[in-house]
Amino acid sequence: MILEISFRFLFDTFLGVLVVVFLMIVAVLYFSLYQFKKLILLLKWSTVINDKVLNAIVYDGDFSTSADNLEPFSENSSFRDLFLEKLVESEKKFSGAANEQINKLFTDYKLEKEAFNKIYQKKPSLIAGGIKELSAMRVQKALPNIAVFLTHASPIVYQEAQYAMINLKGFDGLNFLNTIPNVISEWQQLRLLLSITDIPSGSEESIDLWLRSENDSVVIFTLRLLRKFQLLSLYSSVLNLFNHRSDQVRIQAVETVQSLENSTTIQHLTDSFKNQSEEVQVEIVRILKTSKDPRSIEFLKEQLTTHSLVKLRIFAAEALLELDQKEYLITLRKDSDSSDELVQIINHSIQEKIC
Image (cartoon, rainbow, N blue to C red; front, top):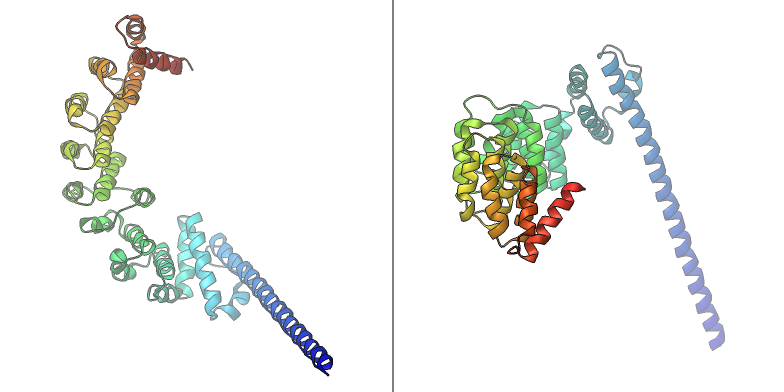
């Protein structure tokens, strides 16, 4: 009797497991089929959209073989999201009249609704996506909505908002630098710099304000802006940053002074040298090496023979080689009073020059 019950229990258990496995297989097959159909649909939609965009660009919006194929899906929210995504991708690849046709498609199919819907969501990635789309399609009326996100907690949101402000307003879009509390990352700085194509006259006051910002990343970004557009009138303001609390700001200031170079630059660099940290001093000597100005020779000789930092002394030796001071270095190397370290530095520098 006990054996019969045990057998029955094992049989029922085995049957239950088989049913569960069968249901799992059915579920996996159903999900795979659903995903496959979804993929096929996406491929079909992509083909239709690409054809629509291509024809709009090639035929200047006057002819499209895909007009009838596009219509059945135009009210589908997933299709419209994909359509908007494709337009944003296309906008990056084309310019001029082609871009106008892409923007016309955006307007004709009223896709701004999808983009606006995204910025009203809570998920940062969706908000950033909506901002990106509104910016790419040049939706000027979205500026007040986008400006709200300049102080958003999520970096991907406020960074996209920063970029959008410049994309839609040009240089005037940089006004957020007046009050921005966040650090502008290196990548974001590059992105913003690339998007600015010109600086209107009379902007010096705003730029000078940014140079005095409490936000170090704003100051660094502004210095790079000065270098890009060669704003020589702000040379004195850059010099004031040689006393900044941040070494990174001072390094950028040194690079900017060299970029805006005038007849007093070498003197300014060498005069400030003793008051700088070793990191900034290294940058000054590196800049002097690049400038190849004969007026720096005596200064470089002094640093080579007296400074305590090996890296800086190597730069000084290399700079002297660039200034045709090889004979001086060889003579110094042979001097019995020269330390072994100095000899090694000179040997290294000469060997590097040969290589």
